Amino acid sequence: MITSAFEYHRPSDLAGALSVLEEHGDDARVIAGGHSLIPMMKLRMADVPHLIDLQDIADLKGITITGGIVTIGAMTTQHELINNEALAAAAPIIHEASLQIADPQVRYMGTIGGNVANGDPGNDMPGLMQCLDASFTLVGPDGTRSVKARDFYEAAYMTEREDGEILTHISFTAVEAGFAYEKQKRKIGDYATAACAVLITKEGDKISSASVAMTNLSDVPVLSEAAGAALVGTSCDAAAMKAAVAAALEDIDPTEDNRGPVEFKMHVAGIIISRAIARAWSRA
Image (cartoon, rainbow, N blue to C red; front, side, top):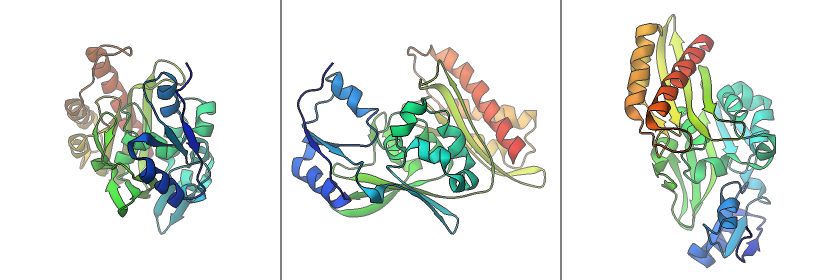
């Protein structure tokens, strides 16, 4: 289908984008890569009289790593995440996850900011950002604030972002850890049936910290603190693995859809979580 009529804005700076948002209120929406909003507009499921394209705002692009802090501009594409060598060294889990998002055509346009900002439970980056304990920088008419990824998601497509705010940057502390992002999907380009991000650090032969987060297994990304706690202090033996997977499964709430019934999703989730933990431990 064809979208309803809209006015197209392409500001060159953040102030210009915020000004258009403030002027038109609920009639305006920002667009990053467009993979979520444009299909909704074409299906007439979203009516956007004023569309604000962020492509020309240079301050929203780029990757910097300073003093162990990684900062990624919201308009940085998945393709750029994959091909940034410094980021791959500091946070290789992002490289691994980005390669599993959709297909090359989508990754050339899809942005990390768009992936985390709209609260789609099927997107890969929200759970990954919770695993990394990342923070999101939000800029709006009342100034700048920071929100933890672990506090950002309220329900499907509902987040802590206020009307009139734009998510500008994502930041986290780089940690040397074993990592894995495991994902099961029906075909290339599809959302995950189940996906899991894991980070593990160890001292000697024991796990000293563990972070386990899951994608598309509830209406929000799920960080399972209980799963991480079940691994800490162990050598990731079979009993610890079983306990961690059981704890993670207790924290999710999948729903039946065209990717399968709840029982199937729980089964797949258990396998994916086990694989992610085992791979992260092997790399720790």
